[in-house]
Image (tube, rainbow, N blue to C red; front, side, top):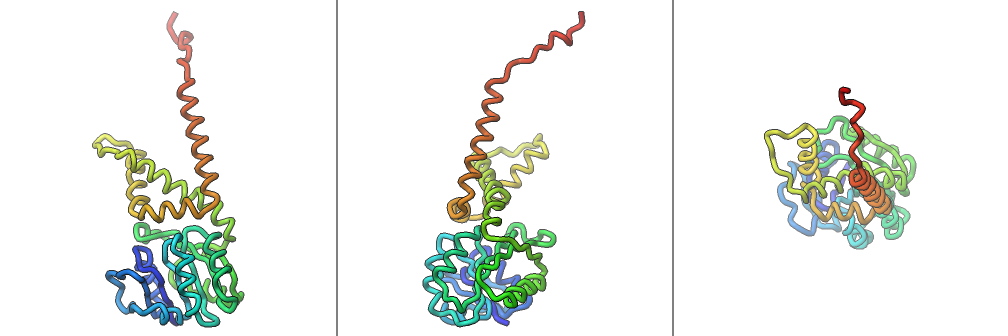
Length: 250
């Protein structure tokens, strides 16, 4: 079986390495691919599009343009899979731009170059437009790769990930702006905040902005966060010193 990876950035290289456990992997990127795993070959777009499985590992904001360039090269029966951090937008793009004889599946690997050692790494699967047998075979391949498939709808995914991923990255970026100092007297919680910054800010700012912009539920998450912050600040500002007279010895 053959698999193609379009977009060979930090995650694309990791994904090509994972896929090479059971697939012959080919990659394409309009920029330099950098160092690649052994046995992974670079091919032109017109040739990688002929693979059995074609994985889109491009930025969310570049997805529509990528699909426009790719669509005429895909062969009937090919399985086209996106790996974006949002699911509603790429699913709609694929439905709009890709012929009906191409099977469409959405995925979101819930790990990356900085968290690849996570135990039982999950991958969200969304059947966008695919024959059931094709979809089931793909789910089995995910398991063969040592990954754990988590099936859900596109809208359900984006609602959930607006908080479980979007909020986490937002807090990481906000804390990063504080330029927290290192300290030998830090608490465990402070160290965890520093770890959060390191984990979230290793990704590009473009990925962060794409996750916030292309997930329509992220706007509500940010409003929710702002309201919660304002409530806490109001509580602090309105705090009055309790009366401790009752505790004094008479």
